[in-house]
Image 1 (cartoon, rainbow, N blue to C red):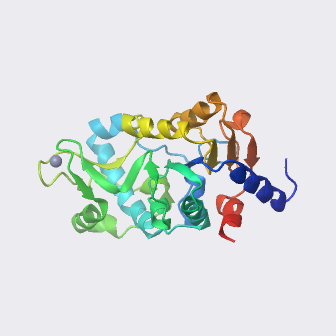
Image 2: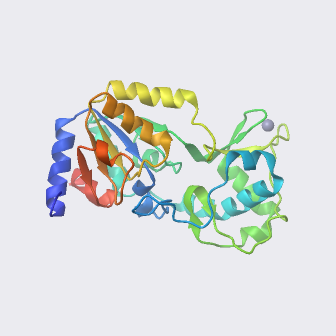
Length: 276
Ligand SMILES: [Zn+2]
């Protein structure tokens, strides 16, 4: 569609200029330049041998929980060390200039807020918060991380390839020795306050995001293949409302046939003109 990155930047700049109230939806591709890996390849296919844990498994299987927390203990270290990249900074600046009606992110890393974005809906929750499924108490993941490292010194010493959502590959490691934390207050199951596979996005969050579509004049997708319905539905709603959609994504998206403009580039690169 566009021959040079200059053409792409111009087309994107014009799109943003023409639509001053943007509904921005971001995904994993927005955070890859911060060192947080993506789930999917350019064809939108799953990249990894192991899929993330399903909610049903987490709720019913102690071994699965041990495995989850052991991997997460290692993966979270990389996640918390990450800092925002130019894609996050560009979108924060766009908001300061009054161009963002709403930012909705599928990422759980908190990097938009770290870059200064304020009007953010964390569609899939936040990895830095842990919730008790029994008494609903919320605690900071940082506290739990320290406790888990104290109780599991052998695992705390491990390092591994990081994976999405603070998960990590620890192939060949026995997980049944892992001491899984329980709620201090009631002994209930603790779970990262993120939406797991097989779990629904909380209704209020979807409602708030859908309401923002009404007051937006266009949608900008940044680094998402929209393969998961929780994100795709917003593109669908936007198209149904007759409003245009632009997307920055290195690969195919599920909404390609709904797009007005597609920029196949790294997010930080495609948005960098906003910082100059
Ligand atoms: Zn509790």
